[in-house]
Length: 228
Image 1: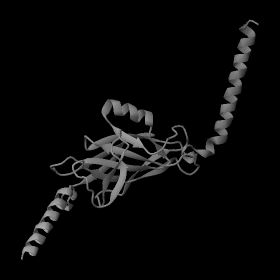
Image 2 (image 1 turned 180 degrees about the horizontal axis):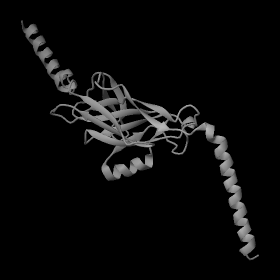
Image 3 (image 1 turned 135 degrees about the horizontal axis):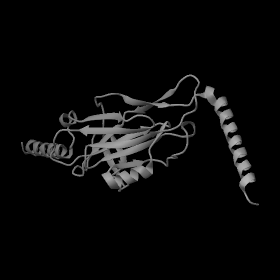
Image 4 (image 1 turned 90 degrees about the vertical axis):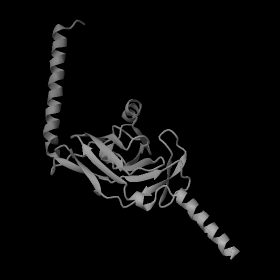
């Protein structure tokens, strides 16, 4: 009888500890939602992220992992300015060449931290693509970002665990829980204008003629009015 009583106490204690360590119970996870929108037009757009969840008695920090294809880029200097001015917190997993065209670039991942707010606006810029003779625009597809959550009050992380930087300024690795099965669109896309390759010859001819005539005009005036 005593053994049964002790076993019951131990099981209750284990269940109590487990429930306290589980900061993200299944019922609460159903309240988590993520929406992503693209605003503005042309080569310079904004990605608008909004994450929502129901009230909880502990702090919750969110991190978005957004894969960026070679057709777009983020300006790290602009992100640094926005961090100082607006508090936007974004890390890039690799160096980004701002001048390279799409066909000479590679994709990268942006880490968007939502430490104080549940929304963020991240500026994204389109790269120049190869000219085309069949289309005036090219489509660039963006994958849906991965949503990670963690809490400093819960050292144990359950579910799908992902190692990522703790904060935008603290690059120590923390364990985050990835939130799966979120409702919403599978991804987003944007269209960018491309050059017309059928106009290459005429553009080159006009450019060369304009350059030659301008040089002749300048040399003629220098020879007539200049002093040597």
